[in-house]
Length: 124
Image (cartoon, rainbow, N blue to C red):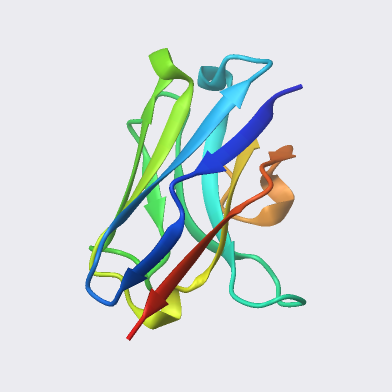
């Protein structure tokens, strides 16, 4: 089993940047593909944001964040990052990372493990 802990959330003005981290413990993260999802409001479904393959050579992005967000991983540090630039108020959400053992988690059902999430608030 792998435990995931997100950090780096916070409040920022529109146009600003944040870098989220997803740190893993319990298992080596290189055994998992990792995705980021967000939930914009309680009761709403999780929205796919970005994902990265096991070695980091394949990445996937939602159209809404393409060109603004960058996902990367450092397997030596057991950590995946989400660099978020040019943030918009509509990016406000709880961001969670998820690990997929056999599939790249581009949908919630493809994930085996989830972190608790970190709040990102973008003001206009």
